[in-house]
Length: 325
Image 1 (cartoon, rainbow, N blue to C red):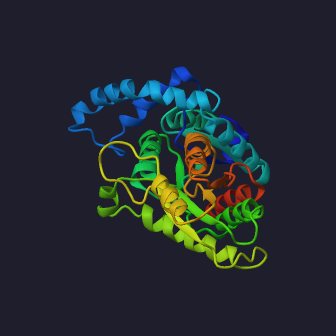
Image 2 (image 1 turned 90 degrees about the vertical axis):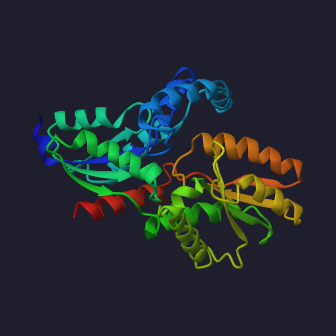
Image 3 (image 1 turned 120 degrees about the horizontal axis):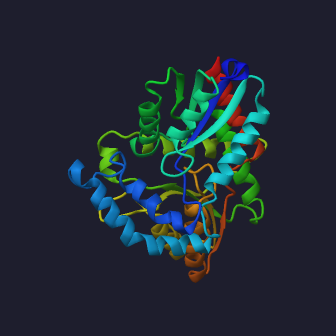
């Protein structure tokens, strides 16, 4: 235990995690499908055996996807860079920033152990999912609470910030920069969010409402100074569907096809529910969707991910300061 630890507030950046090598893909998938907060694979006692089978069946295809983007997920490197930038932006003598991942290293439980060993007693657990869902933030915070329960940590949870003005500003700024290369207003924006089974939304999950609110506020911001983008043409769609259940509609693939059929020739895809590059941006959008658009004679550009952009790090800083008060 250190004096610095006792005087510091720990900030946990909580995220999904991703395989850090090709060899990690299968165990990562197993961890993911073992989580009953995401998907219930029959009665609880069969969850892990079925998760083992699914991870075995899906691993080869998923490994090829990761090979196409460099052989691993970039999410750990980016989250580490976000943590370092955030700690620099904050008062370094008061705040220490850590990262904890739900499904791969560094696991949340291991980071909690390291934080308590340093004597830190006050923590802000900040979900890097702006939009709350039981399947993402809910599962991640449940895991955090399980391992923090008997540690004596005093925790303040930040579980949603989909309408936080500095976040909206950071997203609008990247969209404005990315669409500047199009001539006039001759483009459609596709806000592509990670999909969820419709059953979760019907059960009361607020994710869809949160995403819609973000899109509305970003569009309003883009129509105002200094961006002044009038008459924005936009669509909301969903990507990354898995399995036979009905997912949120329309899919991003269907949206691209429909817009192309209607004469659209310039698409700008905004990965609205993601704060860092990972397989959904680098493979699904940059490779699959771009090739699909080219087949239809459409130019597809993607908005840069928030990653370590200055305005996004400022948004995280403001969230921490607001919740440390």
